[in-house]
Length: 481
Ligand SMILES: Cc1cc2nc3c(=O)[nH]c(=O)nc-3n(C[C@H](O)[C@H](O)[C@H](O)COP(=O)(O)OP(=O)(O)OC[C@H]3O[C@@H](n4cnc5c(N)ncnc54)[C@H](O)[C@@H]3O)c2cc1C
Image (cartoon, rainbow, N blue to C red; front, top):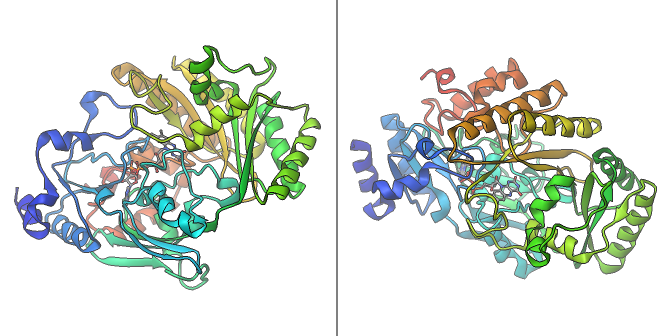
């Protein structure tokens, strides 16, 4: 194909993959899909520099060929799956640390570095990037921005946008733009175009570099688990301790089913699930971080307040440690990680809706009902607090999916769509951390109404030929294809 020959001339043969066996692995991410739904690209490119990416997009633009950028391919909704073939840009070959500015507490990094690599580079300065999803060992900086994923420490530091000062992108015409400000922590000048990148799924351009704000590493951290009679009581408790002025570092409400998913290590060792009171419907994992004395004082005060909610502290440290290791400290090895029941024969499948704070409990029961209706095995619900010092949460409503069964994958997608639309009936949103991909694209207008047209106009400005990750966010027909 002519465009492949041009790629070879432009960036060098060693950076262009065309062997079908190599292409195949780029045809799927971690979203549940049957083997015949794997969609390999026509060619994979391995760029080193922004200039390489610019050359690649120039060729794609001239030939009208689709371009999909990807990182660690651990997305859970098919965001990086190249639905219409074309060029797949593997950004993991671009992982250099460009600059650490310890005084300004900022870092400039290429987009293919993992979030863990960022921390390996800045920790020696006493700084860290607190945007930390569980998949930090493989999730890249570019992908974290492009799918607007969640962080373990969102309740203190927010999501990636709270850290993102600026990003360099290559647009769908091959133009290189810097969006935002490389050094200033704040600006009220112009439109905040960088914010458009959060959740953009590579549909506006390829993110090539980013400047991220860092934070000082706290001296100490204490993690606890508290069990509640109801999900709603855990929410009320969090609201109460925020009112008391406590500064929480992490807060995750697990439903009773979900805890088991995080405590495999405990079960492996003891041959049984952790003993949690039979009345407990919700388990709150909560962390405080900072100077030792302050942490102890805040943690003890929180536990005193928990008594007002008839909640109980989990005393068996091994349960808490097992959960925390699974959530944060366990090294991620694809297919060997903490999910022995999934990824081998069954995959983890989730819907990620958001609902008003006061309706969490009601929505939880709907989740159980809808999973049952589609005959799917429940993993459970998790509510992650993701706004700094505030009660707003994202939701993960998860089930096991046997990806070899076309029928089960279909039922999973029906479950996902039903919960997403139900969230709108609850005055909520269809997505809180996975973005839209092609899964939600057909019904995105339900959430956005006429403003969807403005989104499509913005897309056209960045990508007039509709070549950047086509089929994601908007159905391809809506892009005039
Ligand atoms: C074990 C496990 C744990 C997880 N834990 C969490 C969690 O705690 N919180 C959470 O939110 N998610 C979690 N996820 C989901 C997923 O890992 C994250 O959403 C992650 O950010 C995806 O990163 P990635 O590099 O694998 O992205 P990919 O799957 O490669 O890409 C994701 C999206 O970003 C786009 N993209 C990637 N790079 C670029 C770029 N340079 N420019 C433009 N677009 C780009 C892709 O086109 C795609 O749309 C987890 C997944 C697994 C498998």
